[in-house]
Amino acid sequence: MQLLRRGSTGSAVADVRAVLAGLGLLANSDSRAEAVFDEATELAVRHFQQTRGLSVDGIVGVETYAALSGARWRLGDRVLLHNPASRLVGDDVAALQLQLLELGYNCGRDDHLFGAVTETALRNFQRDFGLRVDGVCGPATLRALKQLARRVVGGRPQGLREMVAVASSGPNLPGKRVVIDPGHGGEDLGVVHAELNESAIVWDLATRLEGRLQAVGVTTWLTRGPQNSRTDEQRADFANEVGADLLVSLHVDGAPSDRPHGVASYYYGSAGSISWVGDRLADLAQREIVARTGMLNARSHPKTWSLLRLTRMPAVRIDVGYLSSPIDRSMLADPIFRDTVAEGLLIAVQRLYLPAESDPPTGVMRIPIGA
Image (cartoon, rainbow, N blue to C red):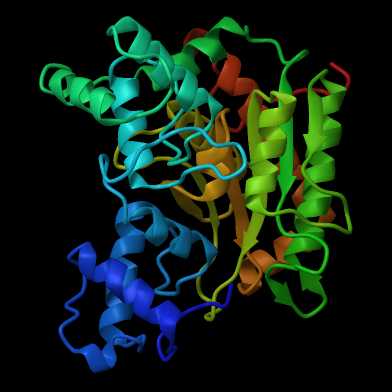
């Protein structure tokens, strides 16, 4: 889709403004301005992005437009059911998922997508409460959910399921399954500076990490090849299809100024739920890379980006520095630096599975290749 930003006009802008007005983020009293992306619209978009865990840039791209489209719906506005040919997406689906999760039914995370897992959870709820078992969230099912919502609040069993899965899989890496996602690819070079581009850098980093993981017995997959690309939704679907235990997505950042620098990590987190294991892995990766490279620690952050939200396993995204920064650029161009980052990521994955009493201090663990 065409990016919408300050100065844009047309029906798509009017549509965005209408959603923002419906959410109470924008006054829409001047009909002449409805199709103009003005300063007030940009501020409203930034506010929406901030509250939704999206990149806060005031620009309506694919992620923000999808979130705005889903924000139109409230639970009860429409009948919800699983249609593989055209899956329902929206805030109403997320609200249903959160209620099912709080009741102890496993529908994955609140990914706003009514898929087969959500349908199964809904059928189980209907069966347990004497409702018609059809996997359709209609008036009768909504009434039952509303009655129970008055009595059942709190609890995030999906986070506990993630933690139990990690603990029960044991501390050894052989047999673990990891999807490595080098960002961008093909014609999409990502951030570009002179002869360096994000796509090539993260591809090199991904293959270094892949080699290290395979050497210790981890089964790995790459989401793309050296000359092609996929959408984030396709990457998430691929990771789900192969049944990975973890997904590690690799990126490089950029900014209009040359001042921002450092490494940042991201995991799934929304107002309703959080991936506790993703949070832990992002923190481990962040600290290991900082300790081994001396990069500025730009911390780890919760986000609702598609790749983090749609994966059924814990997923993290690591932004390894800024190509726009002369400080980071010189490091990113160095193969030894990229090898050090790959080692730090390997150690982070290993530490994720270690029990607390066996977890070493940050920056000291080594895993000899072939061990």
